[in-house]
Amino acid sequence: MKKMNNDFIIGGWSQNLTAVAPESFSYAMYGMITNFPALTSGTASAPGWSPKEESAPQHASCNVLWTYGGAGGVPMGTPSDQTEMDAIIDATNKNNWAGVDFDNESTMNVTNIAKTTVELKKQKKESSYTFLAGYDYNNSPQGAANLKSIVENGAADRFILMCYGDSMWSMDDIRNNVGPAIEKTIAQGADLKKIILGLTYSGLTEENLDYFLDLVIKYNIGGLFIWEYPNLEDKYLNRICTRLQINKLVSSH
Image 1: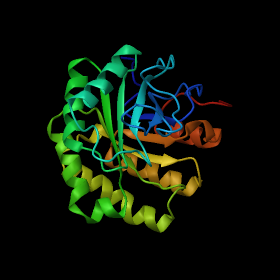
Image 2: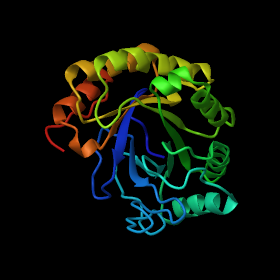
Image 3: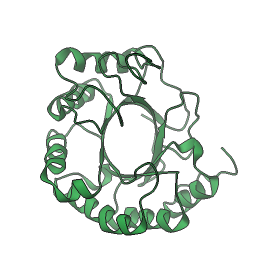
Image 4: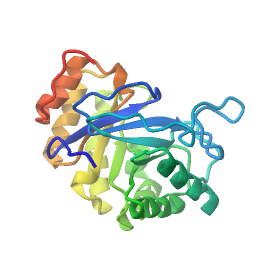
C-alpha cells in the first residue's frame, strides 16, 4: 500500500473512471455500482461500467477502490448470499482494485457486508463502510446497530460518515448532526483514525468547510472525503490541505 501523507488523510469519490485524483489524496473511489446482481453502475435495463470488466485507474498518489452501493441501489438486502459476496471479491482481485467501499444507502445486508470485509482483508484488500450520518442515524438505534456489527469484526479500514444530501446541509443541520454523529460512531467502538467525514462539493463554503475541518481536528479522527472531487474548487482543496497539514497544494487539477 502507498504511504499516507500524515496523520490525516483526504480522498473522495467520482462516477467518472477517467477522473484523476489530486496528488494530495490517499484514496480515490469510483462508482456507483447500484445494479447489484450484475455489479454495474446504472440499472439492469441501462447498465454502465462494471468493476468486473474495468481495471482500477492507476494513480501514483493513492489507493483506488470501487464503490458497491449508493443512492438507488437495487435490490435491497444485498449482498444476499455467498455467490454475491464471492462476486464482489472476485471483481476486486481480477482487476487490481485496492478494495471496496460499501455505501449503504439502500438497506443492505450488513451481516454479509461484514463477512465480505473479513474475506477482503484475508486477501490483503481494503474496505470501507459508508453510511448516512444525519438525523436518522443520531436518533434511531438501527444505524448504530449496523455500524457496530461492522466495527466488531475488526476488518473494515474506514467508517465514512456521509454528512450531506444533494448539496451541503444548512449550518443548523450541520451543527445539530455532524458532531453528534462523530460521538455516536466513537461510542460504537470505532477507532478514531478509521472515522472519516464525508462532504460534497455542491454548496460548499468556507464556513461549512471550516466547521467540518474543525471537527476533524478536534476529535483527531481520520480525515475528510469529498463527493465528486473533480468538481471541488482548488481554493477549497488547498484550504483542506493547509488545515490538515497535507503538503500538496494545487493551482489547478
